[in-house]
Image (cartoon, rainbow, N blue to C red; front, side):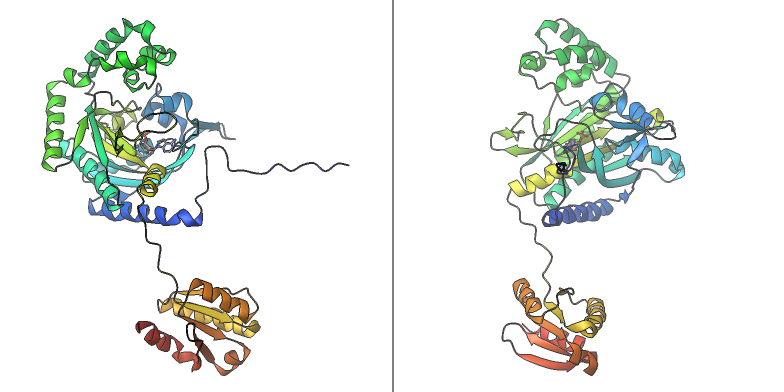
Length: 437
Ligand code: AMP
């Protein structure tokens, strides 16, 4: 019988492996996010990767691209509809409400770090499983809180060594003033309907704000003269935005007023912002789509807590895309130092030597001496070869004889000189030698 060809297994489309050689970037970002986040008073929160589908329909919004086209939803055996989270904010707000955090001292400040899932057309910088870190400030309506989020975002990017970053900012108003803007937008676009791409014709009906997001060549002339949300802000939203810009000026954070920035989600009110890398010709663009690359974005969402069943509670936040940050770090040629290499290699020989050296390994670890080993290799030659390759200063050799004598051989890898020392003195001796240049 002919043998059936076995299909090569691959990671699902739009997903990828984070290989060991790339972990230094991830470690660095995790560290900076945690350290700076905590310095700014944010506490880590982890919510489930799966949530009730309804959370995103009600939170992210029924008419958004995410809910319409991008969710990985499935029915469980018990008949519930669950969704792999496409974004972090709704889960954080659900956790806030569910855990009765309304009774705590506000504003509450949280951060998260983890995978998100969107059924997208995979391309450079766009994945189906991607990672975000995000920050949320719940229970404060002051403009200074919006600005603190922007300040923190830029601080993180700066600490990661990134340069040439700019802030795009806009205000979308609130339920008081947005309807007038929406009406003006619809009126304007309706009278130019035949000049729009098919997608915009749909947006005009279901989500007119997204008309301003369209990247189609055909729609650009119409978009260029479209009404601007800033012209329709009520006095409260106007003052809020003015104050945000004044804070940014005070902090010397350069920003661009971007009248076409609407963000894709339904819940935003007042301030919205994104952070974009710059190229020499202006905003850096995705090679395939020619769209500006966004490292992350966010804004104020004063009605989301209520929408998800909590008491009316103003809030603001942002999320950043980790793959895009790493790609920029690499593009800008930033070197992230890897952890220091071990200075000592542990060589063992024979079963008894192997056993004793495992114990010694633990002891060295406790003494904070970084050791490498190749405990499964049987020959001394092959082990010393690895030690040489790693470039350690000393090898410790524990053979049958040393195990019986309770001793260890210290070999200076440069000179090849070997010396036998008593087992209980080896850590002290090693420390002494390592401290010498
Ligand atoms: P959003 O809230 O959708 O603007 O997402 C915030 C950030 O997450 C974006 O600016 C990107 O950096 C990143 N991001 C969003 N979707 C993807 C994706 N499919 N693949 C990679 N990164 C993404």
